[in-house]
Length: 188
Image 1 (cartoon, helix red, strand yellow):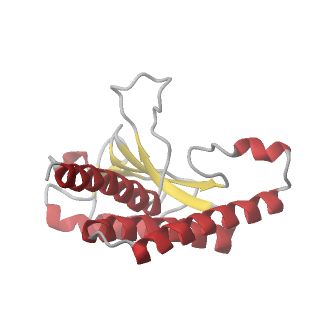
Image 2 (image 1 turned 180 degrees about the vertical axis):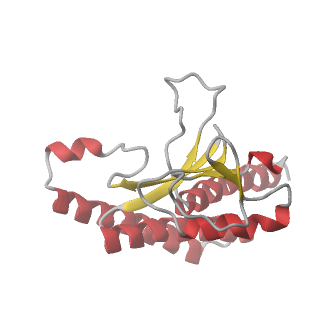
């Protein structure tokens, strides 16, 4: 199972002798032992911006991508109307306002089941806001490739980061919990 956990490196790159080089220029990091996942993390920390790290071949890659837009680039049309600095300030204000609204809803929500999903949404949104304030863009690094999806539909899947994961999982969990608890209250 863990034979697929590999990282591709340039053959000239120096790698610790603890990895076994294969014929195709890749190195086994996990070596069939899930306890060695920390080795994968050590290699990710050495991540070079011009190289991709292949975690599972043709499925999961780590790449470095700067994202100056928001939400599948739905506001990319603003490039025609705003300067890059103005667009950056607008996106920071938009995200900050969204975080504020969700936080206020979080504070005044009396429903106990909404706290954890809302906390996830807030933390994910804050992570992206902080990234945008500090760097001027959001760093996305996780890329998934789904061979079974037609190429015209998100293949590869849009590159994302952990803040996006928190936001999406929090939103899905909030939706599910509202559907479950609101429908159970209506049935009473």
